[in-house]
Amino acid sequence: MDATFLMNNLWIIVCTVLVFLMQGGFILLEAGSTRMKNAGHIAGKTVFTVGIVSLVFWAVGYGLIYGEGNALIGFSDFFYGDASTMGEGLAGSVDFMFQLVFAAIAMTIAFGGFAERAKLIAYVIFAVLFSIVIYPVIAHWIWGGGWLADHGKQDFAGSTVVHLTGAAAALAATIILKPRFGKYNKDGSSNEIAGHNQVFTALGVLLLWVGWFGFNAGSTFGVEDAFFGYVALNTQLAAGAGAIGAMLMVWAVTGKADVPTTLNGALAGLVAITASCAFVEPWAAVLIGLVGGAFVFFSMRFFDKKKIDDPIFALSVHGTVGIWGTLSNGLFATPELASVGRPGLFYGGGFEQLGVQLMGVVACGLYAFLVSFIILKVMDKVKGSIRVTEEEEIMGLDISEHGGYGYPENLTTSNTKSGA
Image (tube, rainbow, N blue to C red):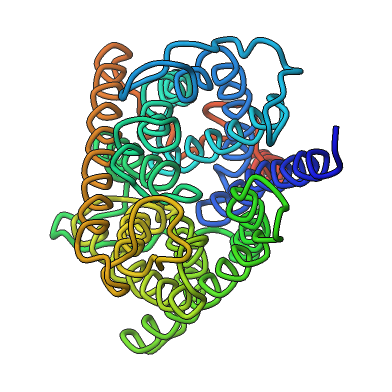
């Protein structure tokens, strides 16, 4: 066993831990962006649904993606098998763990569309089904040797596989669950339902930003030539440009440098560069991030005008910008770096790669949305409703679903006032 093999495996396990810790970032981001009365619910459901995904991925998810099969799905390697299996680059268990945390991130993004109004059972059932019939199918198409891989679809670390897939599922959820009570008035105007803690949101974004180095740079799957450093550089530049682009855009349009928009701009830069971080030059990474930051601002306003209530802006950050990030490969991928597919339009590749990227966006986005919509609609009919009642929503999901506040002093204060 040579030193390179050991270093590759150590590197990927470190990156696995970084990606897994992104769940902590999502907890802070989602809790900070929503109301205090739902904070404990958000933290708890994130942890137990990651547990569900872990077991389902072990049982069938990994095999559906990477097992031997056809252009649509894999059919082998269920229940993982021999964890000591070693390939030329990574131990089987190391590769499995890295792939598992990506599946968990996609599911967490999808749950952004459930925020503040879904019953706990909806998370449980959807986590299982998302991990079987949605995420593994799309991951197989692109990363598992499926039909989009055969066409040369470029998605280095998952702008489509992870982010667009999760956002498409979130869109289905927001449509079926409908807006939160009090969000929109009869005349169509929107009321702001502010998150309870911008510091939590900012810290969540920072944790996600750090974890993204595991997400993107870890997708090199090795340490040879230190190429992971180049991927990390592009990731950092795009994230910074996204934050600046979003802040400048909201400042110019509204006259205020809105903090949540700026924070979402940083995430938009990260999402945008995820597909292309290994395929483009640094100047292109800056441009991709800037455009992503601008897009997220206009996308947030667009969905709000359409009365699509998206409390943590998953549709804009991961969906709209995930599409842009995927398409950007077809524009900026260089001949030297395009290890998959062809160079982009601006490097003499013509429209071929852009067409492949667009085909992937349409196919994956539609599949994830339609299957999620069908699953959630059936659940809604069978369960009576997957949404909590108006009384439970006003009360808060901490109490109605779990029997206790995430901030227990709130309950104490409330009881004291009632007794008085």
